[in-house]
Image (cartoon, rainbow, N blue to C red):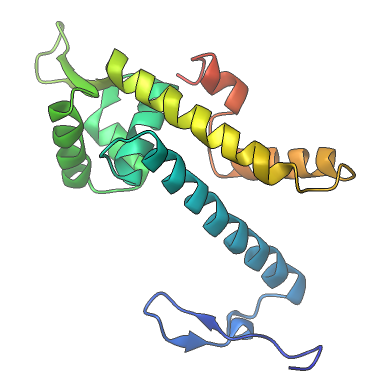
Length: 178
């Protein structure tokens, strides 16, 4: 490959596509590729931290617990929107989490048609354990980064998280993401 050649990438269906076909400038493609690579590494860390806690829930189920832990109890439709899934998918996910006693449903005393889902104490402990395992593994990875540029990396990651609509870690940890 020459310095100007690009590596083919895979589309969603698994077929090869030309990364220049989207018309994005090279700097943008490079940024997207860097985030794709980092996201694969982070998903692997997430999967390992979940497995290390010996729980039998999926990453999407864990994500639902994290959203509910950070934002507080909410309607299933609101959870579905936050997770970017169909309400029926969120309902099935909540059914499974409730069966494992990680989530509870509460009817509104003012309007019994409204049901809110929230994390149980056991669910909160699970989120905390998995988060601790994830922090430990991330610390090991970050130890391999050179000290220079870390503050720039922190700033860039916070900006990315904000743009993606994530609750800041310090707010989430304090329960202020609600």
